[in-house]
Length: 326
Image 1 (cartoon, rainbow, N blue to C red):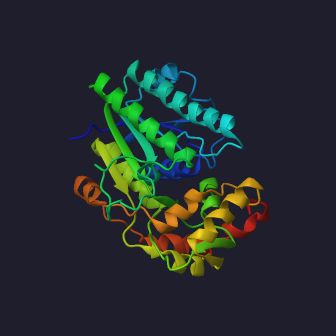
Image 2: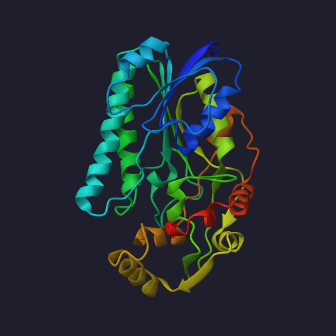
């Protein structure tokens, strides 16, 4: 049985997933206190919380010890792509050093469980990917996807840490795109736009997870101290062209031999932010994950399907509140 009265620390607590997790944990009667870290203020007030406004690339030993934290959920991550190779490498190194700093603080304190939120993108879009893909598949992120590369490297560092610190449990969640009602997540900007490029004769299946479902999964893992690596996705799929209809996006369909040069041109001219050939690779070879391992370990049944997650997002005002995003 997991101990009652846990003190849970969350890095990146002011971010999209962090805010959802705070709201979920606030409702959990078995938790003694929440400890939150972020460089930005919290989005909403939270009861029974100790909030530290600081960058967790700096040691957080004192704060963890002062609050008697035993579980850390590491959500702090910079998903941006750099404007050039040097900036991209700097962001990737920033994410790595931040994780290393958090791990070091965990090793020096009373922390016994470290949870890391990764991404389905670590598998990479490849023609020979199994469908569905399971957690034991090799991580092969696309060379053009700097965020996916950073996630892969962070997972590898975590694996080394787990071997060196066998008294600290490690859990890694490889989540698909997270959506919900009123999603305010900068990472979705590269997925959903008023104009989207499609590939002739390709209509791939896509997975989404509702933000509240992800928060509940995280809460279960915290309370039951479940360890391992797990794919996370809501039940069901949404096909690409169905998605564009729901989002009311205009689709330009081109054969691959025309679409790839056009995407590279748009990227070179900075006409579309984050536009790379990898975006088209995901259309040709989507990553469809198996979630059987997660269901077996947690017994959790998702409240929302992939279609419901996308529909909730589409029905919100997010897509149209800031035209500069596009």
